[in-house]
Length: 116
Image (cartoon, rainbow, N blue to C red):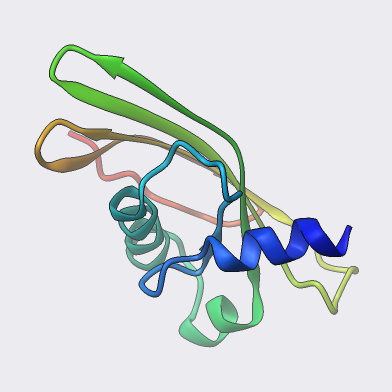
């Protein structure tokens, strides 16, 4: 179990607090974009984001035309306060030369996709 935690910790890019598995198909640029989505579109206060652990799981990448679609589920929890429920965030990001968010769903935290 310790090995799994170490492999997650090593995989976190400097500009993202989301921990991805070492063998994740999601590149750093997409991981950083996903973190910016959480920072700007989910209603966590700055101090709340600092206290929480964010774990990416069930990540997938699929090439469609000239772009790649990345889907990921993110678990957000307070590891020291188990009385508060974990939040779940589902996100889909497309990278076709520019990064854009195509889907964002959440439970136990409000996230707005602002999709037109």
